[in-house]
Picture 1 (cartoon, rainbow, N blue to C red):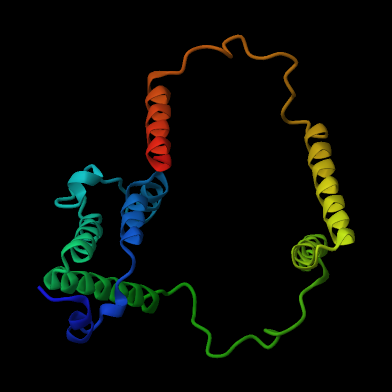
Picture 2 (cartoon, helix red, strand yellow):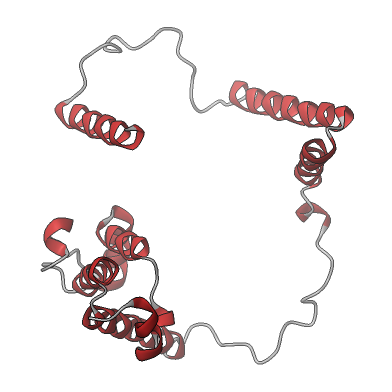
Length: 210
């Protein structure tokens, strides 16, 4: 055990540690449908993963276990200031950076540049200027800073034009036909999975407000 000020001088590589939320996000992505799709594409198979509560201690998927362990170490370091957990977390980050570097070095598709392209500082083409959006941002900033009524009117005009374009885009759509009446089952009860999902969201929001 050691306090935070001592540990900063004792443990090299402490700067590598990210906020615990990032480890949680990494684990969540690892088990998400996008993560599964990536694994299917890169590994050719989809591996099973334990629930996140178990994953913090013993993840069934090999590629998730280090992330779960890093999250576990991060939480223990924050709560208990356990130096061993901090060292484990630094070790995980060092391994992650090594894997990332090796992946870049072993890439035989993209050749790294030896110098920037000759036109790296050329002006943007006309289509890339996004003049209306840039002007709207300019108007918004001027209105916030100077309370200039004319800038506010310009900003309102931009928003009106945007809504008109959006409405015209919907009206000119020939792929999806607009409904003339609601579907016959519009007031049918929610399926079981959707009801549970709605209840869990409601409970979460209630906790956030309390």
